[in-house]
Length: 123
View 1: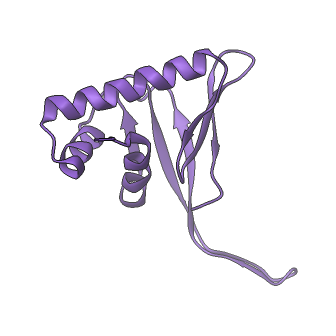
View 2: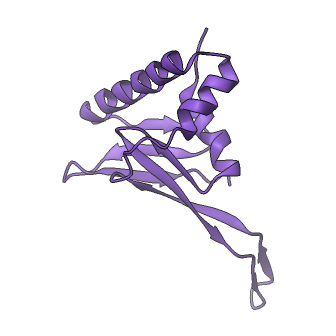
């Protein structure tokens, strides 16, 4: 069975303002109000702006419990699946490649070797 942790993160961000990926970092959603540009006649609906915080590494259980429930796994197996995702993501970033989170965005390392995040346009 294929456990898709990236898609699980995406689903959780629809319901939560923060999803911590244990031992990796957290994605934080900030609410943006609807806006009207009367000069250009453009309406922007409410949305969430996403950012990545590499300091949010402490496991709050949200992601692991979601994976556990969605795939009908034990907590230990779900925890291992998330740990494997983190290990693969770190290896990908170490090779200077991007980690794509479906419907969320992508993570990459910048010239200073810091993890950066580019949000997907889907909101």
